[in-house]
Length: 314
Ligand SMILES: [Zn+2]
Ligand SMILES: [Zn+2]
Image (cartoon, rainbow, N blue to C red; front, side, top):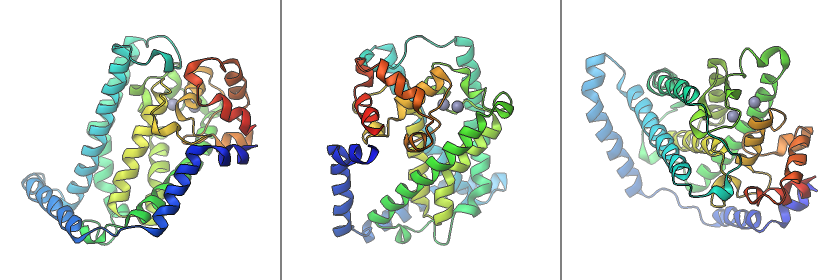
């Protein structure tokens, strides 16, 4: 049963206890942290002010977009570099989910698509969408929510995102829609981290909407927005990396086998429509082929942490 597997898993217990502990101890940000945050924004503000004047841009919107772009780019390229080194230096072959190297022409095409999205589309979208997300006092350090609120909001973001992503992704696999939109993302039958965001503009939009819907509905502070968008990006890179690493934070809870489940989705193009968890797939029975696949791979060390859990879950 799904329930018993969750409650018997020691890691789930440890995380649960840690969350429970935060109910007794959840520090509000110290005035020192708040003033440091304000000083940081002030520095951004004075550095970006000449650019805003030169290009006749709104300074607040420019700070909002630049901060998020900087965080996402640092996270994206450092994670890509890490997985590239794992491949290049053959560091963890045991945990590699599939063999083979992608077609260099496809990689170049993907890189062009990524650069266009990162250098043009994302900054413009962030700049113009700021009024939707930046609620009153978004720039003020004194408005930073306490640790517990940030954790709760991040958890809600994951739940909202996982639900929206599952149903929209499942819709994209409908035979009438698939070839027009989602086929591009599936061009990489054996995914690589760089291909995480290689998709049709409509799919890009729906994925972005699923990511930002949580902070939007909760009216979250910009800190939560920045944290969640960065977390989601790194989780997606991990899911496409082709590695199921024992130290990955994205497979720590049972039924959260992000990389193996999404890797199967690409290599077999069936079922496993979820993003964060296999919960919706389990509930809707869209993980049946995946379960058979895990059964076949039960001695494969790359599936060390999932075969047992999914067998128990079913
Ligand atoms: Zn798909
Ligand atoms: Zn994918």
